[in-house]
Length: 145
Image 1 (cartoon, one colour):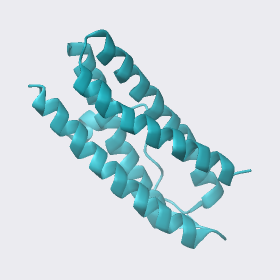
Image 2: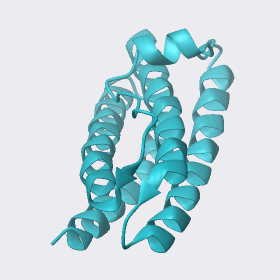
Image 3: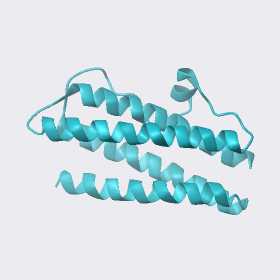
Image 4: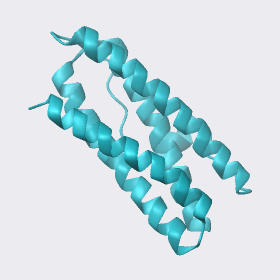
């Protein structure tokens, strides 16, 4: 169970960095698809904020402590912060495709570990994330063709 909690905490950290990154992109997007990307990024970081709360509360419900400091988030995330500078929408899409792949990969790890230790609540929770990430990756990839 402890490995699964560690994976959930890493996932939480990645979600936190992803949220800040999406908000940064929302503020700094530029280019011909500004209006669409600006609006979608707000939708995405709002969705990620809900996921953060759900994962943190899930960790608490399991009797463990979620990581909660900026230092924790930065040190335990494979997703990197975005620079605070103007960025073209095409570059944003390319970057967040990689980040959503990272989230998807971590969700798969959590699912596999949860199944192994018969933690069916965690396994069921992660199913929703896997569906969301697969759909987003499909849409992002279609948008950059």
